[in-house]
Image (tube, rainbow, N blue to C red; front, side):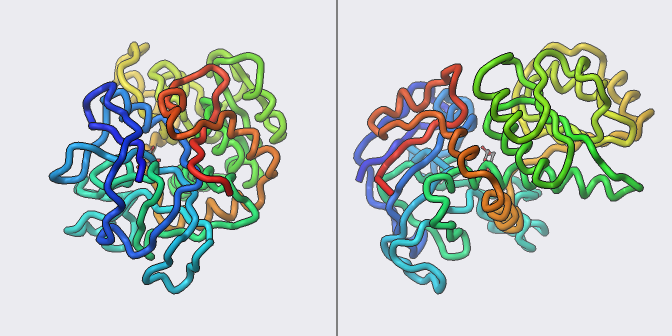
Length: 348
Ligand code: BGC
């Protein structure tokens, strides 16, 4: 079969090439790829900055946001041939740590977890892939290809759950949520926060185009420029840029008792103030800055509920570019008008 593979930590090594059929030990369910979407992590892996091949192998099949069609349900009791399915990205560590032992692999403590297409297990950008029944998620057939947004929706579902969990430390009724960054994660965070009935604001660099339109279509308010100029003190900020200055401004702008959830992964960035100055700002307003990565089964369930309630036309507008697998180079380019790029392996 063909697969989009990479040699992790070596830039420029992505290929669309012949690759062995998925090993039955990777899961009894055999799946035909329909689509796989590209995310920032895939681009980082392609740039040689992240990622791990499976032990004893040099290449990793990319892809962790996918929709597939079941060819053989294997040992699954709930799936049948033809069903649409996604694979849960992270698998628990083998020790297991206490969190993985209770199914909270997203909170893995020892770092020995594995992730499809990212860390030590092959991803879903191959013509066929396999998954174990306990990591297979049956998808809503009426959402079709839009199901490719489920995985990033799990990420924001967890992030917002973290915000609310932290908030229970005191009396707190958050009304306003600021999302920084209007990429796929930011837009989906805005969607989920608005489904929760919050007053949602989204900030991004761009001033015109699809991003402001999509924000306004949610009934949310769009801002461009500095977080310091949004004109209010948010109860919660979901930070989706990973940009140092945006994070620094968020800590200045958050309201008293407010929670900032960091979801973006960046590096560097000029420090505008010293660490102790930031700490003082956080202390004097009882703020919490919480990091959030990955998602467990509960978040997959809740994310699917959110997608089911979302406007399908709005969801479809997030999928801005479709590419064939042989055009993987184009798919892995960052273009100004992109929100989510989808690689189409088969027709639905
Ligand atoms: C994925 C997560 C993963 C994280 C870190 C993200 O792109 O959506 O599932 O945990 O990267 O590897």
